[in-house]
Length: 222
Ligand SMILES: Nc1ncnc2c1ncn2[C@@H]1O[C@H](COP(=O)(O)OP(=O)(O)O)[C@@H](O)[C@H]1O
Ligand SMILES: [Mg+2]
Image (cartoon, rainbow, N blue to C red; front, side):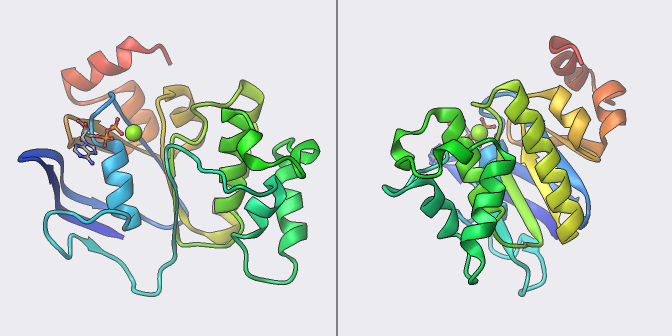
């Protein structure tokens, strides 16, 4: 998937500006940056949930399947298991949904009405839902923001395994630089809507080119 000259403007303010970036399948990309730096907007445009200012800024095969999990996971008013099962389409969906929920320690919550789940539990359910089917590009907007440490680590393992199995590209937005280091091959750093740095994760996280990126990264200790 190639992104070029992608901008998004709200009320006359350009909140996103990406000159050029190429996503390769089989890799995990972490998108980092301060609040309001345009990460979610980028994810939404990539997912096709919102449109960019100009058409044709994203080039990908028309047959590509993109799956997206928004920053705030939603729960339909039905059981947790049904919430996940409904994202599939084959006969064995129920078993697959059970398996995914089990792998996230959600076995005891399968019959629970999904709207009664906690924030972290809802996030895990949303993650299971988005992983029910294969895809070419998996876009996750802060999937672990509400999760405890153990769930976060399990999520990372699950995402890595999914990426390997499908051969897809994963684009994960995160505020945890430790998570970016653990899970990603590449890091994209956004500043005020602009993709200012991108490259191999170790390089960006430990040896960024710009002083501003360094100042942002130094704020957190990896
Ligand atoms: N629907 C919208 N209408 C107007 N402004 C928006 C809208 N969505 C996002 N923005 C603005 O765009 C900027 C980037 O937002 P966002 O992409 O959500 O940031 P991030 O995910 O990096 O925290 C913010 O300043 C935000 O207020
Ligand atoms: Mg966001």
